[in-house]
Image: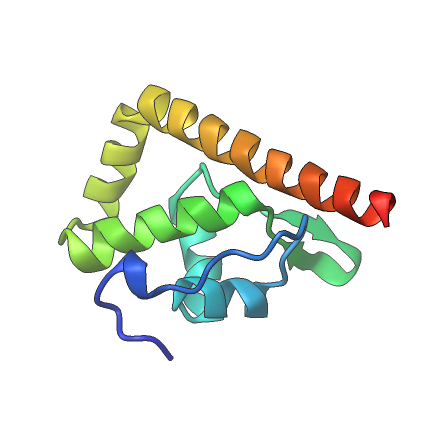
Length: 118
């Protein structure tokens, strides 16, 4: 598992639509039981649940988990403090998240275009 030092050490997020809890655990260096706990503590974190209550996280969920991880592990926030910080910066986060999602969608569309041109 990765050292919980900084987000720079985390692997890049692959160009996929959905991620399993195991994949997110690896991408964010957070154990699956911690991810399930954070779902209860952070209302912004809502993975899609399908058959058998299996969780499927989307890119914005992975980005949110990395942000929560940074607040808790790197910046020293408590769960309550991190929750308040996320709620207080929601407008700023929405803009940054939207920009990140647009960049990711563009990359994915360019990849599809590249495949179609072959």
